[in-house]
Amino acid sequence: MELPQADLEMVHALQIFPRVSWAQLGPILDQHPTTLAARWERLHSEGKVWVTGHQGSIAASGTVAFVSIQCYPQARNEVLARMCAIPEVGNVEESTRSWDARLTVLTGDWAQLTGQILPLVREDPGIARLHVSVMTGLYATGSNWRLDVLSPAQQQRLGELNPVNAAPAGSPVPQQNQLRRLLSVDGRMPAAQIAAELGIHPSTAARHLRQLLDSRAVLLRCELAQNYSGHPVFCHWHARIPPTQLEAAVRQLRSLRTLRLCATITGDSNFTFALWLRNPGEIAEVERVLQQVAPGMQIIDSDVGVRTHKRMGWMLRADTTATGQVITHEAG
Picture 1 (cartoon, rainbow, N blue to C red):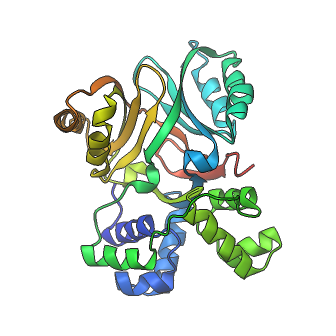
Picture 2: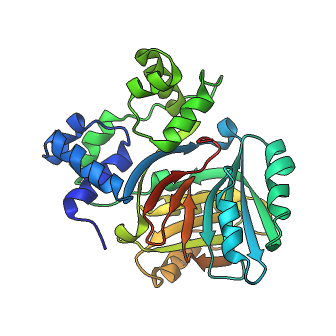
């Protein structure tokens, strides 16, 4: 179910530079800007591609927790629907193991996580038990994953158009929450439209947007429906790793272009990561290579996803395409 080459090239380009203009991208892909715009609109309307903004670094943007839940028999579908409806639950992923689903919870601070969201999940009548791990360090997210269809020269040209100017988080950007809300729904929203939505001048909107992205308080990602990516298998691992071998493991995982998550967490497992794979047979190879660079690492748990119902606030169909409905704390 992979997309045609021309479509994959455009998606790869937007993975590198999610806000690239069609005029900028046209010469790099040797396509007319209007052709690119029409292709994007078609794919986006079909739910196959979208650009979204989401919570970035922990220091800048609150608390992240991973919650595994087990449902009572016959209550699974209702529980999943209720979890999807919670704005702070960014991801809802069905699991193949003893846990029915894994949730990614994103909150503004520790008090909101412990005082509001976790009690809300615990009190759900359809949930039999749950397990919570809190993220302590973030090394990669879905914004890091890449296709492999553009030439090195094309990738370099895109990188030059979008240099990384990481800056300290500093003071919050004016109207930061409103900006995050707009970007969660449309990460490519033009500055002029943002200005109109927020009632500010376009140049002010552009400046605030740049500050927000440079501080990494918000990360942009170009998403592709997984069934059309060439990597239809989602696998999530929990592991125990000696602190002295963490850097080597992270470096190895970052070399894998379909890495979707890499983080340190609390609990019996202190390390978690997730990848999109071509087939289940690649799971053993990933673990073998990791054991070579981090021999003290112990795999505690791994599971292959059955279905993703919600990804960074975006509701997904069974065929992995987006419905267009966005339910996040940014989207309100």
